[in-house]
Image 1: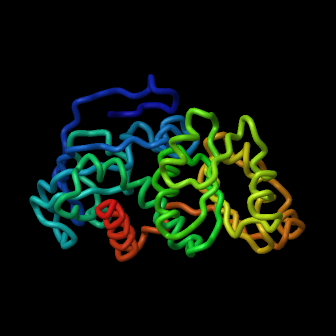
Image 2: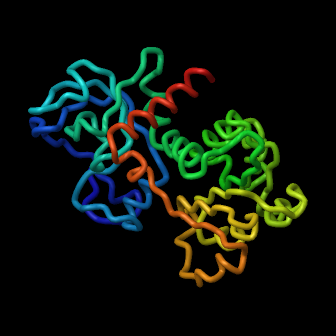
Image 3: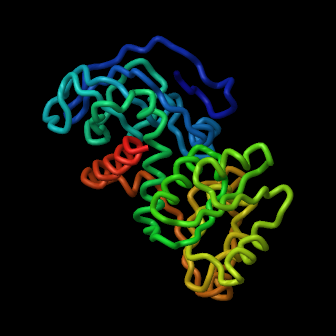
Length: 285
């Protein structure tokens, strides 16, 4: 699948492309399953930088067909998956850097791995490293019925947290409750700041996870306790407008981070550990 210019779905074209021999440090992977993610709409539209013309897609699972010179991370025939590296997962086969691949454990289906890598590893770094969730923590996770939210809210509950989730409609509320949320706020009907204040007896939260962006950012800050952490990891409603950083002081010496999976898995050992933790919680249900 190729993208020749930024735009809507109409810019995607299905083309025959010859897959080259892997360069040093690369492998050729034959895909068995490909994941789809909201972030790819950002790339396709040009909201996030994407070289055009070029490929699209950020995660997949498959089998290693051929090794380039110097590759030690994987072997021919290995079942592997990835969520990173150059765009191009929307394809039957491709070459990509061996360092972004992780081996799949026996018993983990290719389709599950392809669907879980980007969203699941995002949940891992958010909950275990950006803010290490502890038993008894109460946290707010926006878009709880979204791709990352459905995984992250289950995982947060598994870690012993009390999860408040927001959703955009009543139809999604039940889904959020079934996937780890103790409390669900339908944002079209209820003010989530007031609900958080009620649930925490006015104390606020140690952390808020926000992938919505423009529509929720400033109100999310009002949900935090003094020295709480605002984790802004997406912008499905649009980019967060510029704001006066003195607001962080006025609202309680708050912390703000804008993390990305790329940085949290840039080191090979961190990538392998991130995937291992994800595969473990999938395997144990």
